[in-house]
Amino acid sequence: MGRALRARGHDVVVETWTRWQEDVEREGMRFAPAPEYHVFPTQERPLKPYEAVRRATGVTRELVASVAPDVVVSDILTLAPALAAELEGVPWATLIPHVDPRSDAGWPPYSIGARLPRTAVGRKWWSLFDPLVGRGLALGRSELNETRSRLGLAPLAHVHGGISQQLALVATFPQLEYPRSTPLPNTHIVGPLQWEPPFGDVELPPGDAPLVLVAPSTAQDRDGRMLRAALAGLSTLPVRVLASTNRRGETAGFDVPPNARLVDWVSYSRTMPLCDLVVCHVGHGTLMRALAAGVPVVACPAAGDMNENAARAAWAGVGVRLPRRLVTATGLRLAVERALATPSLTTRARALAGWATANDPGTLAAELVEQLAVASHISR
Image: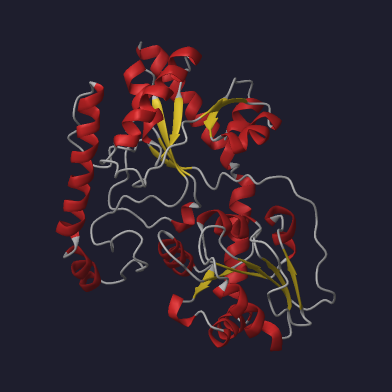
C-alpha cells in the first residue's frame, strides 16, 4: 500500500522496527523507528493489560505531531498509532492483514477452524457461543478503555475498538470472506497487499512432473514436523518437491528424497507461479501469495488464525485442509494426491488470481486512504 501511495505522489512515512529500515527506504519511503517493546510478560515483571500500548503511544504521538500526516494507517494489532492519531486529531484507518475477525449471526468463533454452517440448525448451534464471545469482546473493550482513560481519551461504547470506524481495509481476497447479513460500515475488502524481501531464483528439481512447494511457517513448527512429513510422504509420488526451511539453519539434518530439493529460502513471488500445489501452514501471507499465483494449497494449520485461514480456503474451494493430528507422511501424501486429482481447486485458485490482476489491491487501498484524507480535510 505504501508503494502504491508513493506511486501516486504521496509522502509516506513507515514506522516499524529497525530491521525493516533498508527495505522501507529502498521503496522510496521515509523510515521512523517504532518502539520495540515486549507485548507479553517480561522476565522483570508482568505487564498489565495494554500497558505497553500506553507507553508506545507517547513515542508514536511525537512522530505524528512532527510529521503532521493527513492520515495514519495502522495494523489491527498495533494500537499505539491509532491512539496517537486520535490524540493529535488526525484521521486514522485500520489495516486488517487477514480475514476480518468480526463475526456475524450464526458464525463459529473466529480462529477455531470451523467452517461457516450450511443450515439453520448449524447457525443456531454456533449462536450458543455468542455470549462467550461477547464476554471476551467486552473484556477487551474494558482494558482498552482503561488505557484510553490514562491517555485522556473518552471511553468507547463499541467493541473491536482497535478497528477504525472511519476506514477499515481488509487485505484478503473477497472470495474468502463469509457473506454477512449486514455489511460492516466503512469496511472495504481490497485484496491481498503483498510484499517480500528481494531474492533470486533457486534451482528446481529436474523433470516435468507436477511441482509441489513445501512452504513452512517462519513462526511455527520449529522442529520441522510438517517439512519432514512432507519430504517423507511425497517421496513415493510422481511429483517434484521444492521445500524450504525458511532460514532456520542447516538443511543437512533432513532426509531429502531423490524427487525433492531442499533450500534455506525461496522467493514465493518468483517460484509459486511455477508450482502446481503449495503445502503450507497456511499463514495468511503464504496463502495469499499462493492464490495470487493461481495455485491451490494443502493447508496444515499449526496455531492461531491459521485454523481460520484453512477453514476459509476449504470453504472457498481453493485448498485441502489437513488437521494437525493428520500431518504425517501418510496424511500429507493422501492430501496431496487428493488436491492434484481435483482440478476444480486449480480452476478456483486461478479465478482468484484473475481477480487480483483486474483489481489491484494496492491501488484500491491507496484510493480509499486518499478519500479519507480528502473527506477529513473538508470536514475540518
